[in-house]
Image (cartoon, rainbow over all chains, first blue to last red; front, side, top):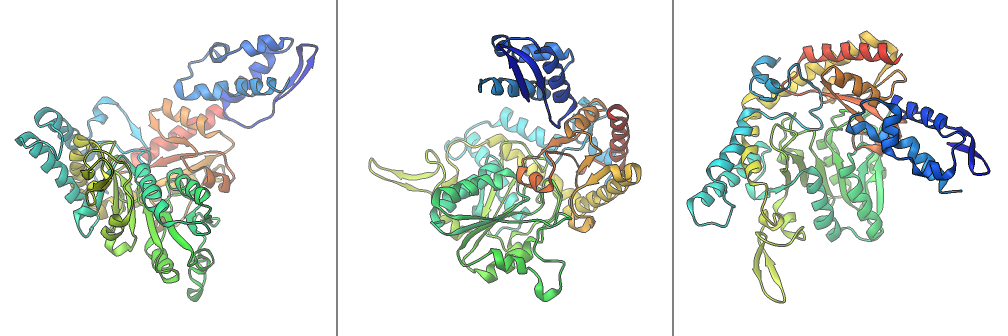
Length: 80
Length: 418
């Protein structure tokens, strides 16, 4: 995942990866959602938000697939 | 072929889960009623602790518990039942060996040899031990077809030449799986042990037989290993019971594993003495009801006959491989040996560009239980150059109808994910 910030806000965000449909869809929707959001707003996002965003019944074993892109985003934010 | 309908009638789960297509026996097997009833019998009729009470109920529990030990011993043709140690599972048996044996005999600059196709439970304990004591951790590779790379296919006088380059006088332990839980490869364990002991007569050989004992007739004396380990739950028995078989002399020399009740002989303020094997390695209250019921699983397998089970699995596996390739051609990639004689009832595969988790999810919606992931064998998947695979595995309650369901399920996967 690569992010370009302008001041405090996400200007551009891209991801690259191979994965299951859930992690791919989650990454795609998440990167759409976070555009123009601030770092503080991004830090507040959690797994509940992701599950709601996807809006499908995931089952307990697929939650980790759904949350993976958010984990990547949060790891990336630690570097800023 | 075994009669699937007759067998399924003896497994209550098929009455509770209608149209169940269970293709994950490599992870754990289903349980026949006779095993479940035996657990119930213990808890309802004589649920006392073992080895302690003088009262009849405790004696009954102890007799039933020890009877399982003797039945396990006969099942694998051990020399005596004192060589059978009960653990929680195969993982614990292997960790016990890494602690009680490994830490006793492996020193700096010694070698531990294993293979790339191991389950993590037969990989990580040895990797950690090697790094702790400064020993070398060596790994036998596989060839393109999923056989151990031993040069076996070459001319006879070159046979097992690769082994000579890996095993040396410094190799204290060789530990390897009998049947790969991913590739299904049945390793030529007997031959490997013979060669390894020729190179180094002092070597200790451990065989992870978790995927072998449920499916093949195992004779530990004929095999020539020093230790073999396996789990009850993969062979129709309850969870919480593992087996470690070892040669009595080595068991006596090993350190105890866990300390406490049942394993001590005498305890003083400044020192303790320990019981002889197997009790030396069985500290604390065991899974009594589960161990007692384990013998019913063995009796059940014995009644069907291990030879019949192997033939049954060979037929389904052969049928499944052909059916999958005929239906999906190039888009399905099946890992492991093509020769059915060298393969257990396990089929791991990749399907087009579809992610294994998505495949397993769509199959699950069709009532088909398969496993997706690295199956606790990450080094092997790295070697195969895939992050994960889908695995279908067969046992006595499966037949061609389950394979047809799998094929139909995969057609649906293709339709949805294309």
